[in-house]
Image (cartoon, rainbow, N blue to C red; front, side):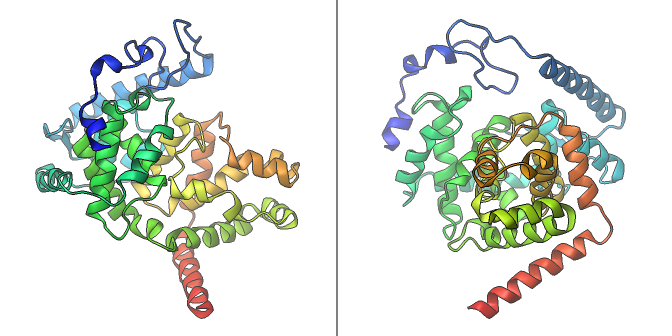
Length: 360
């Protein structure tokens, strides 16, 4: 199996991977063969806005001398001001060309000491020398993960090999977690923005910042907790949907497992929406995802309230259409930044854990 990844013949690259004319700005294949897809007006506007904001960020960084040094492995160090103005910039959406350094900065809570990651790079290379009990399952999951992206379409190609290595190395890095299926989708997003080594480093830092360890260990305690917190927040912020779902006997476990276990990857929302969600995830941590879930339900409230059991579950189990990322993220931030929210989440988690302890 490992032999197949490391002895890949470059001549086996799929024909549609040799040309970039049929992929969008993120690397997703938009049309097969020689047929070129016409870019929708809304997508053009979004891309134009992103390019404009990218230049504004470049001028801001240059004028304020925020570059600390050029970093290793394709990432530079920046000293962004950890203040409300910086957070507001992030809330508007990080320009795609800036996501790599900004996500790193946020995931490390403002650290600019990338030189300390040298040890993690060495650890990564050492871990790759070890066998993993999860190799077979990782190999089985890779071909069905993000097949629409140019990096991961070719069996045993460079993208799939990098994905395989990052996941099997991490399975030995955190042996209690090992490997869980949702982690494949998370690693693919990181590999779009980072080299193989830094994708591994970012995965470890996300596990630390977001406490993903408890999301994936046997029993999935953080996942069960998320269902409880989400339903309490639905009762507070999306009461009509909460009541409607109760009447239909739809619980969050029926549709939100995929949402949390993949951090809203796996085609839960359009890719451009996912990136905006991850901007907030890197800034605030895992708790923001409770509000993402509620905001997604509120965003589609009219459709959900008119849906029966089958229609509602079909919609929530598919890719949820989002046409206005700004509107969605505004809903998320409005709920999350409301006074008393942090204390509320702490209390809800404590409430859940106390109930879980009593039920044992």
